[in-house]
Length: 145
Image (tube, rainbow, N blue to C red):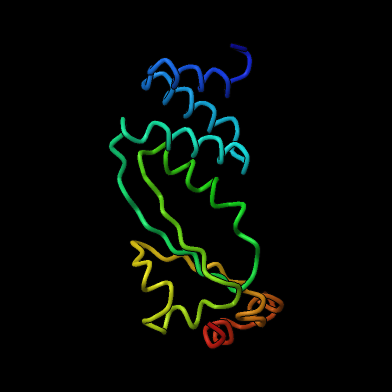
């Protein structure tokens, strides 16, 4: 085992059944590797330890009008795991948030989330506020909102 490689050390701790030390090392690894690849590693190791953990289930839906958010999901899950949360996610389709919110037969309603996050491009949603905010009077801002 290479003690200098934290991934190998974590895998070794899991293999020998030292759950407490593996969890401590996973949290430390998370604090130093908040990236998609780090998140995927952490989430996969928490899955291996799942039977030893009391995780709080939480379902979050992320609705969007644009943007590729898929790489952020492992990061979100890894961060949640380190706080004892088993995060299940639903990522809505591009620019499908309106339909998913109003259509009770949509994937959003079938997913039954505990929380919904709207990830919207404010420049598209309210262009006046984005492009001309400092030029607008307070009443014009309120009207745009």
